[in-house]
Image (cartoon, rainbow, N blue to C red; front, side):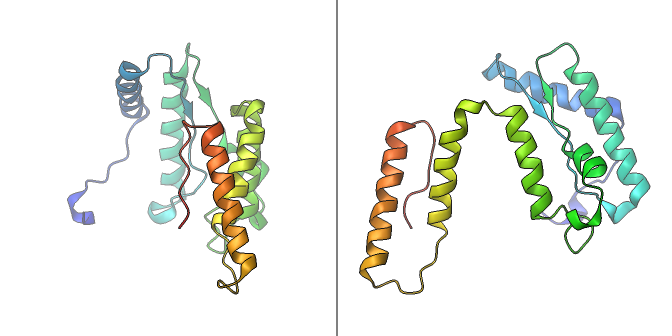
Length: 173
């Protein structure tokens, strides 16, 4: 859809709060016990200027703060981690706006520590290993070693699907 079809508007904290509450209410109709994890993007939207970016994020932070009061919802401070802990430009991509892979890894580590149950650690390692293997590109595809690699990967995926049937994994390409 072209940009001309959209209306750009800075929402107030109250408008953001109403929208977030409506989203929560709709989702809670399906799963009333669901816990929400809120966060604010650490990417600075500089197209409209730094001041407007801070006002927009401030309004969103206020809305999240208001919505999560007296609930079991959680706020993960990705924005604050980048702005306060990782404020050095060595943590940013060449555009000096987006966090780089070092910052992303640090944020993921913080998120994993605070928001993911430690019992999921071994499962997450298995997924990472399978994902890494799926992205592997061989130098020579028509070899016995490549065929063995693919066979072992298929076995790992099948074993994983048997252990965790509710978690979807891609099939072999």
